[in-house]
Image (cartoon, rainbow, N blue to C red):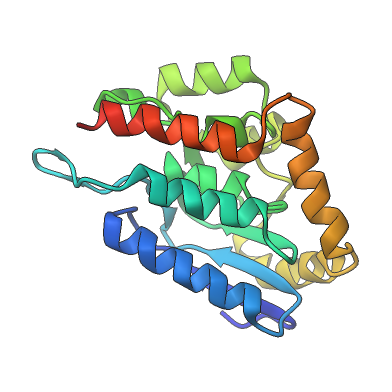
Length: 218
């Protein structure tokens, strides 16, 4: 995918220790690029990111602190960030979308928090998800573990716009142009202000969430 004045970062289908490390490097490269906006796109047409990589015996041993670093990098990004969700955004993938300044979803996108099905909770992404949607709704999404439509994500505040899949590219370019109008330093301050008004810094809440998930996956 090529977008004018945007650096595109393609996400892995699943978040493993190796893919998270590679993703962080890709994000830093995008932040250093000349492009004015960073756009996160999915692994393929069916998946934005399906969250934690699992093997037959459980989790693959993802380093939760490394994933927290990815989320923190998005919250401290030196330029606007846009998540283009076309397909499944589950668990940590949903968290990656929520960490971006703007979420554009196609009408075939789905969102979900299935962590309870695997004996975990969305602790690392919780402080980010709940800057977009009410905690009570996030709790219901987590307990039900159901896949939610793009329309439901829009109503919840998780998506900022829903566009027809067949007309996604022109809409995405319009959104990139809109995001370019935001002064990057002020946008970064806004991200941090959301956490400061909760009386906890973003680094503190992400570290606490990562520790909870690390304990649950041992």
